[in-house]
Image 1: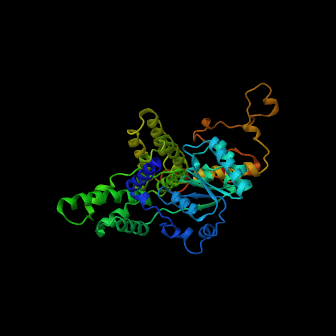
Image 2 (image 1 turned 120 degrees about the horizontal axis):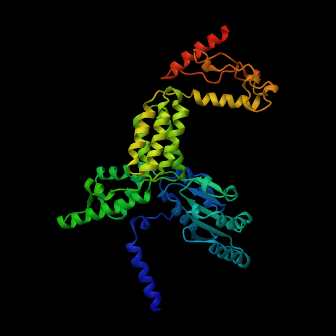
Image 3 (image 1 turned 135 degrees about the horizontal axis):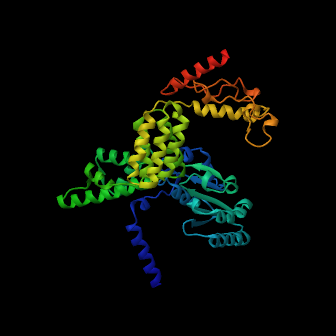
Length: 439
């Protein structure tokens, strides 16, 4: 009895001391903020939960969007047994124990089991495979929660047996609703400026919003106790509470930000290129990955319009290896400025693509005889090299002669643009084609 009393007292103390985000954790679907596309009236996920007919699902969304909260609300709505594991601490042994309990439960009282697996992306392939037979047979209904793109992190067989639901980052309206509920629960008020500031800095994360608000309330309460007035959260409290927050950067963000980075440089927007570069660097992106993308872009999107761009990109990559971060961010920034500011041409890209298509699709008679290797013994008897004209023997440094098989002789792969240095290349090509036709 004494242990029970102490246990109850400890639980009560913990509940009072729990963070605001935990104390306000929703207990109904209507209380979950910002996910009306999934949980609004008549939406499929809500219908399945309320009818207790939920099948295996993957909940994918940024931190603080309510994945764990939703799982706990489901636990309150279901007649099925509800088991919880965290992929951070659990292993195959834990999964097998859950499966064994589910089998016993089903056999003894015909009760099904839901398994909530938080941070499912932390499970490796072997651990995920251990779940598969039970999910496939229906013994376990899996609710997996992940901040990472499940198409990259969840095994395809497990993903194919689950319905994917994506939770959205909270917008400012949802963040303001959350703040209003919290202020009411804490019997505190706040100025419009403070609420606006907290909501605008929410970054889509409800948990972070409530954590910041809790600090701001504490500051307001301390000031109110000194002044003998009611606590009101002011803008200065909100600003002090927010501090700094780690940049969210999951695997899907990695590809999205890299795409924006490349497209900004291709679009000649220097400032946008620098912004996305800074975003990647602040998020801890591998500088070598950034350098590789710049090298590719130098040929793909600039090419011969400014051939120096490839040298600049390669030099930046070498600087990354020799100097390292944080100093190498200067070299990467210089490369971004040069590449974004350079004239653009994708003609090298389209040229190699067209040539490759002909190589794949057009039958060829092979290397013309006059271009074949004539250095080895007996080559001349085969006619190899016969009739080849050495360009350096001509005062022009160039002679018109056939360099391709007959089947693709008339094809034009590289058509220089009028941008940058390619204008000069275009003029020389036009001149040489004219001379070639006169021969």
